[in-house]
Image (cartoon, rainbow, N blue to C red; front, side, top):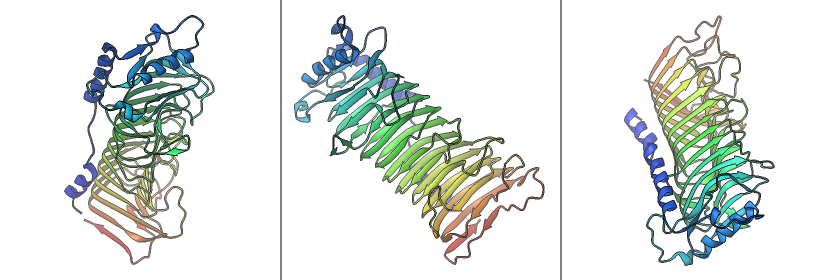
Length: 430
């Protein structure tokens, strides 16, 4: 497979989304605030009324009129302790105009969530969310700030979370024992999670749509995409300071696309992809630990029974690049690695210990600078094929390795070391 073909595979559907999409979301918020179809908290809250009661009353007003946005216009955050539910019968939406600010239903403002409190959208269309979430006491990662279920369609959201120990955005494909697509046709959306449990949990939906940007800083757990198809994230980036947290998980999916995927410096592995038909990444960056903490499990990508295609990948620092097993396939147009311990391991995936494995690695262009240096904690081969691999391939059209085993004494490491004796393993280096 030539480089042009690999690049085409990796970038089909990958999007470069940025400031224009977020500006569009802000414009929608301004339009909604200027429209007459909203309910402001200042217009209904009275002395002695709890914040939950005020929000509940506002939601009843907008759902009774089959549309409208609740706006916290007070000069303080509202503390929400209960689940507040937006639910509209779809049949009541027929004939409502689709112009901006007319048919939206949603929530705008600053909120403190306590004890699992948050907002549920059930069967709603044209959802608009623009919220700042602060974490109160009594939240866990299974709690969700903004949840969309039961066939929601056409959502845009901007969610900023700070010290909230739950999940900022979630769709689970099931609500009160009823199973259905959670939300479809997401667009113009952004999640920023600062010291939160995680940014998102996406499950049980097809035709999900696009989240423009996701930023996670100091996440406590793993953001997850599972049992879903047609999920696109324009730009995903995280900063994970601990070795054992913050892994991004994609599992049991049809199609998942990242325009840009940047992870580091920790996570074991940083991204785990399992049982997924196709995952495409346009541009990939992984920062892999440092010399005093790197270890065997700091991998950029762990691929198990999944097909992953990357346009351009850059690997930095002293961890390892790609672990492929369980029938997994990795196609890369171009990869550049600096000071890594290992570029690729073909054999067992992270949690798959089957005796026999199949693994496939195809790359058009590989450039590696000073791999397996003395700063790396272990002495590793650049590309290692385990004796567990009975079916597979290693195909590299062009490879350049500069300074192998830099400043490491008495190293026996090789550029390629295959321990497999299978006749069904092919190796071709151009």
